[in-house]
Length: 125
Image (cartoon, rainbow, N blue to C red; front, top):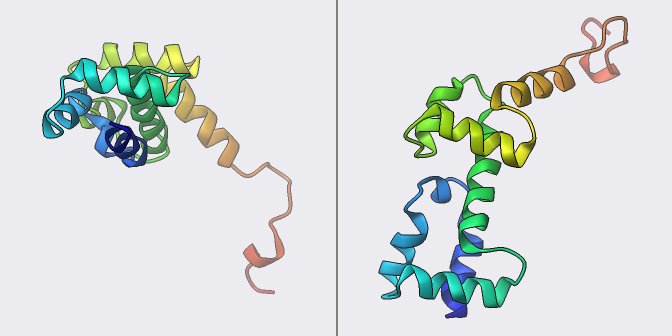
């Protein structure tokens, strides 16, 4: 059973993007979702399988929000049937909307007006 849990913990964020990921892994290992979830809880201890998958999906969403993809397209790529459901889950975990998170990322990456560029970024030196 620990092999199944270790596989889940090693999966990259993109693999976890679909809601049915846990059920698919359970079927592949000839387990029920409940058996896999119980094993996950026993071995990991501090998080349910569903919570782990959700946190991984939303971490992947945060990566995608640094791109130019629309929030709606990101929601669809993550397997959400509606933008409202995606936004609600994102807001619950990240404590802000996906759009606000994106604005915050862009603000952090924007150069400060009047600040000198680092030496390696200067042209003509």
